[in-house]
Structure formats: C-alpha cells, structure tokens
Image 1 (tube, helix red, strand yellow):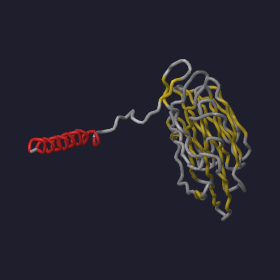
Image 2: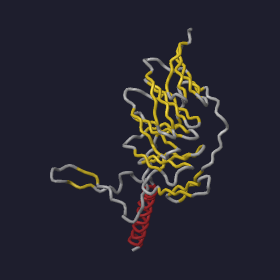
Image 3: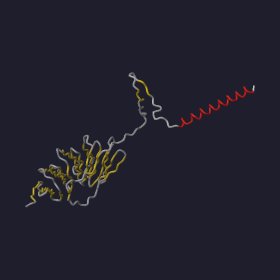
Image 4: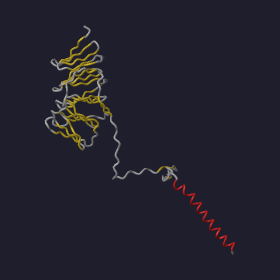
Length: 270
C-alpha cells in the first residue's frame, strides 16, 4: 500500500516536472524575432510554380501622396563677359502665393490673379517691372503694362535656364528661347538650330542675345528683331549703352546703333 501511494506521488511529481520543462522550452520562441517571411501566403498555380500573395491596393478613401519629380530650373550665367553699367533697378511689381493661385500686384494697385490648379510651379520671380512663373505646363508673365497673366506654351521640356531683366525675361531650353516682353505682355519664341545660348542682357527697351552662331537685338516696344551672323567667331565681351551696343570678338567689333537700327563692323587693328 505504501509503495503504491509513493508511486502515485512520484508519477505526479514527474508529470509536473515534465510540464514545467516544456513550458520553459517554449518561452524563448515566444519572444524570438519573427521571421520576415512569416505570414506570407503562397499558392500553387496550374503549372506548379509558387507565387507570393499579390499586394493589396490601398483603400480608396486613403490619400497616398505621390513624390514630386524634381525638375531642373537654374539661373542662367553669361559665357560672354557683360560690361554693361546697369543703373539701380527698383522692383515695382510683386506677387503673393495663395491657395492654388498667384496674385500679382501692379504698381498702380491693380490685382491680377492666376489659378495654378493642376500645375506644379517650378520657378517664380519678380524683378523690375515684371514677374514670371514657370510650371510643368506653361510659361506665365505679367507686367505693369498688362491686365492679365500672359501664357506661353511649352511642350515636354524639363530643363530650363532663367534670366531676368527689368523689362524682359528669358526662359531657355536646349531647343528654344522664350523671351517675355513687358511692354507688349507677349512671349516671343526663338528656335535654336545647331546653336546654343551664350549671353542674355536687357537694358531699358533693348535686349541682346548672343548664341554660338549669331547676335540678336530686340526692340521691345516694336518687337522688331535685328540679327548679325558671327561668321564662326565668338563674342568675348559685350556692353549695352543708351545709344548703342558693342560686341567684341578679338580684333573685331560689331556695333549696333539704336538710331540706325543696324550693325556696323569695325576693325580694331587699324
């Protein structure tokens, strides 16, 4: 009788010890780092290949913001040295950015608004008598002589260089030049064919543009353009003055006279 009772107690004690050992052995696995692949569901298709469970689409009520693509808009720097003595220029126009809009305030107090809904503004600046905006869809300009933002269209171009004058502004791509005229509130488009931009300058009502092939002088009030072929020569420096513009190329000088609206070639070796 004593042996049987002792055996029952021994067996109970043995069962308790075994249970404690199993519990202690399971505890580390409960706190171990989960397997990264744990929880993935795989299924076998008709050809016997394993495929991961397709990702679930986000709930339609959730707004998942997209990461904006960085666009390349930089300030243009002249390759040819600009010797122009610019006067002090006061900016007489400005704008403020509101909710999906830009509001320009002209010097006479007029307010001109533009809705930017659906557009991503890449560049905006006011200088002198004008303001410009560059978005992924449009070029926009406004001046003290305008009553609304003037729109210039661009087509699939991503890289731009921007230069500001007090009466005109330049937006240059690899293929075209877009010049905003504050006098006429108009965008002029100049095609670049096998040439590249070298300089841009604006003094009063004249604009000077130098490329690797030619010189362009624009009269802003009349929108007239005057061109001089460089004959494979490069312009090292230029200077804009009230009555003329000098373009220097080694021992040669091309002078544009405002009065005659023509280029004169001068040999500096004489």
